[in-house]
Image (cartoon, rainbow, N blue to C red):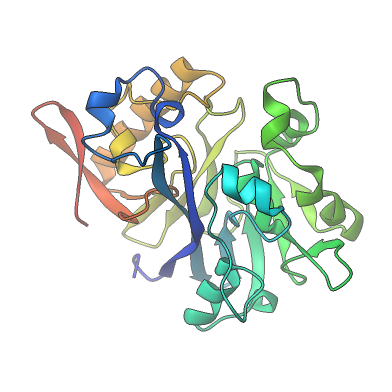
Amino acid sequence: MLGRLRIHALQAGGQRLDGGAMFGVVPKPLWERRIPADERNRIALGMRCLLIEHPDGLVLLDTGIGNKENQKFLDIYGVEASVAGHRSMLDAALAAAGFAADDVRYVINTHLHFDHAGGNTMLDGDGAPEPTFPNARYFVHPGEFHYATHTNERTAASYFPANWDVLIKSGQLEMVESEGALLPGIHMRPTPGHTPDHQSIVVDGGGETAVFLGDVCPTAAHVPLPWIMGYDVEPLRTMESKRALWADAMAGGWLLVFEHDATTPWGRLAEGKKGFEVVAP
């Protein structure tokens, strides 16, 4: 329970990415103490989504990778996102929480990279993308949508139109600015750096607050300010986004929800001897 709201950390699958890319300029002897690498220098990561039982309807933050990618792609990124009897691991996690895709009324994307928005759509019986959540409104920041649809040689590998094109046709995709509440107690907070208009999602449950971090801080190991991914297009902005976010999180005792940490779904900030660290909630 987060105040009066029940929240669920849903694992939409596992993935393995290069540890050096995940930690940028941080030397391997330092980051490997926190998350060990495999023989291909990849580290184990999750694709965690947050499900919120809200009075206005079921809310889902990010959607994982979906089921549209081929085996070669899954092997490169070390993706494990399928479960027997379900379209995806996210579908299985929803079912374990007592819900189905048809129950979701709102989907909020922190950004549109394939491992955060791939589950927005799924392949139908004919192999064509269709909305995963047919009864949902999908929210994304207009700046992020513009960035996703105007790619360059570096960014194109992360953005796949199949994850949103059918939502435009169905009228389900809505552009929303950071200012103002999407729903009572839920709003976007600009946390630029990973992408220019990356958003984290702040959830006020009434007396207790959580922030779904997205990729501003993908794992608990990334809590130190300079521990920033090599994937970030503006790493110095990421650092300042984290600095401001940690100040508010410390002052308010916020719960931090980590999207990519394979083992730690959430925790709270504390001041350690060497800077910020995560403690159990």
